Image (cartoon, rainbow, N blue to C red):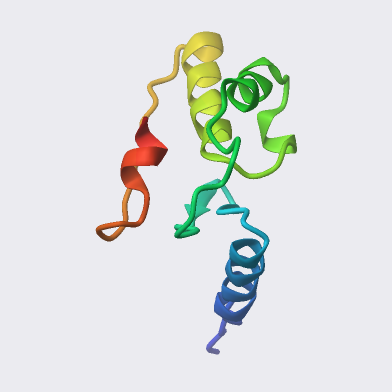
Length: 102
């Protein structure tokens, strides 16, 4: 008996498009943070105030999707559990990898 899993691609693409139009370049799919280059400057996206909100929060994943939540979770995993951490940043040229890794 063959089992097929319905594709989630349309839902993911709809979510990415909606967030792009709202100038919110980050979204999650499971534990993965997806970034879409907004092709314009988004004020406050990488501000110190926003960074502190994610690092001081007890549950950064409860805040809006952001690359800061990923780094905060990795830091907590290292600090609290002593667990090895890694973050993979991947994308095409111009996709925002440099900004995400700063």
